[in-house]
Amino acid sequence: MRHAHTASSARTTTSYAILGLLSVRDWSTYELAKQVRRSLRWFWPRTERKLYDEPKRLVADGLATATKQYTGQRPRTVYGITEQGREQLRRWLDEPPATRSMEFEGMLKLFFSDSVSPQLRLDNIRAKRLVCERKLAQLRALEPHASSGPEGPYLTLQLGIRMQECVIDWCRTTEQALMEKQ
Image 1 (cartoon, one colour):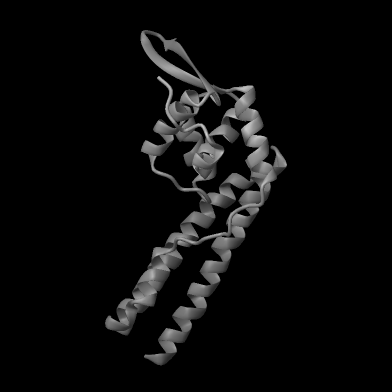
Image 2 (cartoon, helix red, strand yellow):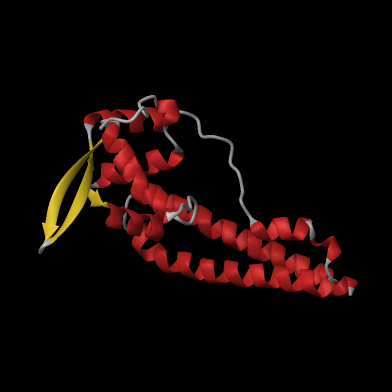
């Protein structure tokens, strides 16, 4: 059954992220989701449901293939990229990127924090710093693996590290300023 998602304008960035992973090798949806959690989630977080649905859309559009395989008696579907999918991916990679956006709940909470106590505001910033410090440790643990692989993943990892360091620095500066006001 074909779906009406044939125009490249109907593709989402998640579509292209999946095509990009399929250009590396064939994956089952479980493996795709695991790979996204391992490598892409730092800068392209998506719900698992989207990751399981998108390969089916790509197959329906002729950009990917689906092959049934068995692990013991358990069936699984392995997805691969078609030549048409590679062409779509190449075209997308050649386009200028969309304007960067930032989704940062901590900043949203800070923006509206005038109605809470200064201590709660400070506690929220500290909590954000701790989360960023944990993420930074996770990213740094990936560095040895990324530095021995393709350049693109290493470069994105370096940006992720710098972004976490920047937010941590901002949190520390803001914590200090808020403590001085108290």
